[in-house]
Amino acid sequence: MNLFCVGLSHHTADVAMRERFAGHAETDCILRSAGCAEALLLTTCNRVEVYAASSARVPTEEIARCLVRMGDHEEMTAFYRHENADCVQHLFRVASGLDSMVVGETEILGQAKKAYELARASGAAGPYLHRLFQRAFRVAKQVRTHTEITRGSVSVGSVAVDLAQRIFGQLNNCKVLVLGAGETSERTARSLVSRGVPDLRVSNRSIDRAQELARLVDGRAVRFDEWPQHCREIDILITSTSSEAPLLTPETLAPMLCSRIDRPLFIIDIAVPRDVDPSVNKMEGVYLYDIDSLQSVAAQSLAHRRQQITAAEAIIAEHVADFGESISRVLNRKSPSTEHRAIGDTSLHASES
Amino acid sequence: MDRQLLIVSTICFLAAVARTIMSLRAGIFRPGRFNFLAIGLGFIFQTAFLSIRGHALGRCPLTNLFEVFIFLAWSIAVLYMLVGPAYRLSLMGAFTAPLVVLLQSFALITPIDIRHPVKLPANQWLEFHASVSLVSYGAFALACIAGVMYLVQERQLKTHQLHSIFYHLPPLTDLFAAITRLLWWGFALYTVGLISGFFVGQPLPYAQVVCAFGVWLLYGAILQGRHLRRLAPKHVAALCIVGFSAALTLLWGITFTAQIQSLP
Image 1 (spheres, rainbow over the protein chains, first blue to last red):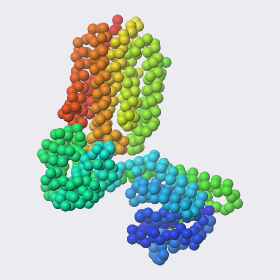
Image 2 (cartoon, helix red, strand yellow; image 1 turned 45 degrees about the horizontal axis):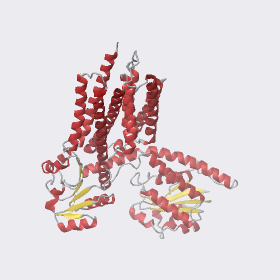
Image 3 (tube, rainbow over the protein chains, first blue to last red; image 1 turned 90 degrees about the vertical axis):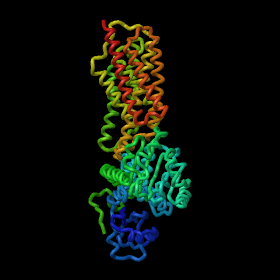
Image 4 (spheres, rainbow over the protein chains, first blue to last red; image 1 turned 120 degrees about the horizontal axis):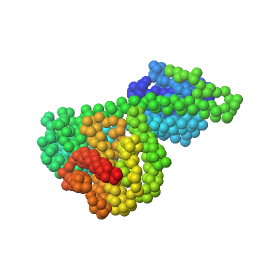
């Protein structure tokens, strides 16, 4: 029995090509037309992959035909194929987030679990894929526990929310003021609300826009000339106005801080040009992050995640070898006469097509 | 026999320190169960040492600088085990273990385990005064450690350079709440210790009394500044380090003087 994976991903195909293949595949077609004994389809926005087990070699073109109704010969260059040990290694890397566009993202594990559940429920996944995917989930968990591949946030919005939690812990006592109703501040505000912020105020030069955003994020609108008074009460300030001159300077902020010396103030300045004078960061208890510093933190996290790849690969390599041995034992026990190629056989290599 | 227990205890704490250093070098800081178990084991051996020494002396083992240091290390460990999990300060173990290793190693290496030529008579007030004071020192030590953690995190947040350790530190506001509680506990116990010192029935050296009140006033001022919101959290954290250094110097001075006076 051969285990193999055929697919395309963000590494080999652009989004235009990926979307042509996503959503058209039918596991039935792979099982019946292509002649696979077991098949599982993993479709995400970044990849379309078929994991299958078959007694005879199934050509990549055959699988590709099941993925898209109108096959184009040129599109075949985007497909890759991994067999046996390489297929196992590939799935372990995918489930652990090593093959993802953002290294270490965890969403893929949930997607893989969902794909497996669908295949299991429909009967398309049998004992081989069952063992393979159960092991993949175990590997992903181990990689996540024993390395820091998922540490930190890698997008501006999530970095801001992450930092807020590092400063305040639980956000369910925090008060937030959003100054300027831009798209990024809206996204950040939404993330904060989703993490439990109960009090969100929105201020904008246009009160209509402030009211609109306040309605969207379940907050309340504040008149633009009143926002400095709110700075005495709030814990987090998100600012993204189009002001040419800084709205907050140490001189304007100092009187507001007098009554809140023991409470930190976290300022997220995502405006360009900046709304907050950088020297505000030197003030006691004030933590100012502008768009560059948020991006820098995101880059640090991503770099750290990349450093963890070697450790994660080592864990995966151990499991690939062990899985190869264990499945060979199972196959030998089941049908000693059946001819099969050992999955752990190092003579087998992935063939890209 | 009792010193061997102490050596094993120090090795346990050292294991926690080594694990922390290895994690930091690998870029993966994970306090985990190992540190807590190593500290727990070290604490058991510390307790066994103090118990054996206490039985041998027929009183609380606080008769020389060596025993004082071990008792202080024990207080720090016991308070960490009580406070750490309660306030989810598991990382505190990574900072606690080096301090305990330092205290115990110093006690083991230097010739300060001087046995008194005559068995000292039991003095309940003196024992109460010394043990309560040392437990308060343990609370001050943990407040100092929490202060270091606060300053490390504050610095990283200010400079926007977030290292591996940052992601394992408790939130800034939680740390500050822990510092405040530890200061209150330490201050209350220190006050009790200070008052009980007047009942020991021995003449108290003037310099010691002044210094002890100086430390009491320093911690009182920190708490007052905190209560009246005159001190920023960063300054409170820094003053915890200053306060503990002062308290430790005083402790050394008291024990050293007592030891000199007791020599024939």
